[in-house]
Length: 291
Image (cartoon, rainbow, N blue to C red; front, side, top):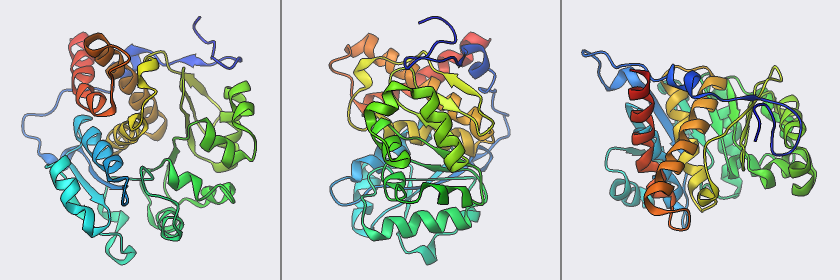
């Protein structure tokens, strides 16, 4: 695919390795975990707790210092077993204080029950830092996508084509037929940085700048890979990158981790938990190339 050309037609600026490499800075010798982002990830529900594990694991592999998972208390043991480094918090909104965190994410595996919409509306109103919405956090807002513009903080949304179609009230085919145009429309509707997932993932700023990714492979068309991306983007936003930069870094490194996984396991055998682990190697590769 030539530079600037997207899978759905139109033009976009490529996400370049040199740019992403610039975001991977050496850590100070006197640093501590609080320097690298305190994150809250509201994810998982009965039957879908693995989504929370994948997002939290990816956030840590992306460099986050502290990760708290907000999930039903009955599922705390799943989180502790799946990602021992994470802490847990319940879903009672009275116990969730977005001001305590450098970035907040919601969506992976949440389900579409009524409490999910209440959670999203609470975060839109109370989160003044970066807020990343994915999966069911977007699905429950599909009836009123313009309400996402009320976000007090800087918003990033990460829909796949089906979720984008629901937000715009069109078919998934229409999204695929004009991916750049659809992503720009989502920006205009929601005021968010938009990550439109798929082959040649697009990242679009609220100012209409469209960036296209070149990393990744078909082996990443597997359950849970989007949860990994949410965790990565949240980690970069929590470390201080602006939302557009955090989204581009997350997308590029997510895809590169997938390429490294495919080199080892092949595209057929690649699974999301492999991807979360290989994120560390993708970042290490970038850091070494920069040296």
